[in-house]
View 1 (cartoon, rainbow, N blue to C red):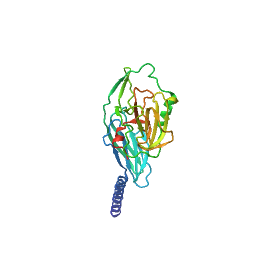
View 2 (cartoon, helix red, strand yellow):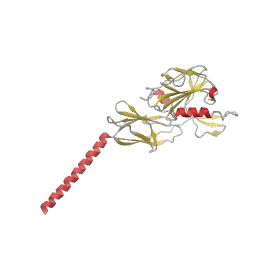
View 3 (spheres, one colour):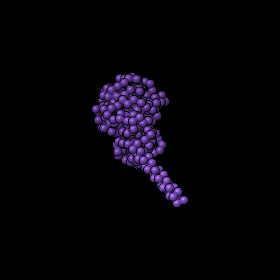
View 4 (cartoon, rainbow, N blue to C red):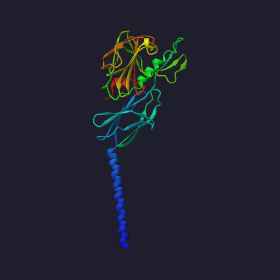
Length: 294
């Protein structure tokens, strides 16, 4: 009996040792196959676009990228078994920690990133009678549909081009009081360049012309408008133009003239408003011009 009991004890120890070794190997395998994730910028602030680049094993399916266990963002393949998601932020976000979760065949990663606060200037605007209700249903519907575009192809490459050489008259993110009342959900959704009427406006990056709207078509708020689809949810909208030189469906290159500066729509003087949208959120265009994304 003692001999049999000893064998049983030895067998039990061997099985437990084998299970522990197998578990350790499984953990190591999971760690070896876990996604490597790179965030850029590493210390974002309100208005920044956060690039989430995922290094995966060959043949891996698209991972799933979510923020704070809620909002899911489209993921697109890059070269070298990599994938990328772009996460927009704006002045309407609360600063603090964001949790970015990446889930896929290689396991899951939870990354905490601190979204830094940022001070935005405040303006007080007094609108004359009749100016507070500009805009038509047709105009709003066309612009809203354009902002929802997520074309699979990526047309931009590297840093974007300044769309006009005029001085910056209003920066991104400015908050406003209208007739003494703070506009809670308003922020200046782009950058304004003051320039003479007729000054050329160029495409900041390659893309498809996804929107052309004219005052004559009911664009009474935006004025003459051109929207460029740069691909993968990245969109430019140029408004208040005096002239439009492109048609919907045209493909344009970075630096190509698409129209001219004007003061159409709700405008107090000649300028170009360039808005840059990522998945429907107006982000700060400046980082896209200074460093861009691969």
